[in-house]
Image (cartoon, rainbow, N blue to C red):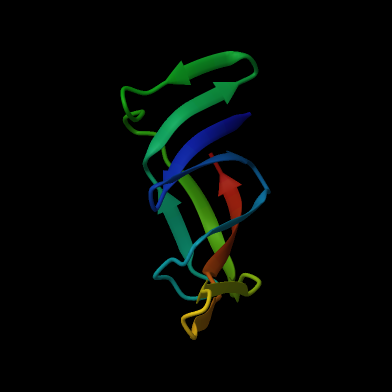
Length: 101
């Protein structure tokens, strides 16, 4: 059994007891979260597709921790002009364990 869910504008294929890194959520560590934008559910070959979402379907999960991704370096340069800019960015994620579909 799996489902396709929309979390913060991104689509994820989830199964029970799966760990998932989503964009940072406004929830504390240990809190339970529910996602109600379920786009598709597959139960042993019986596929149910929403238009655009499935009414009444929810996915619950538990927030395990908040983490950061690896650093991405942004370097801009224009030759012969003396222009060089170096910036870095670390995306923040939330690690969620799917408890039920």
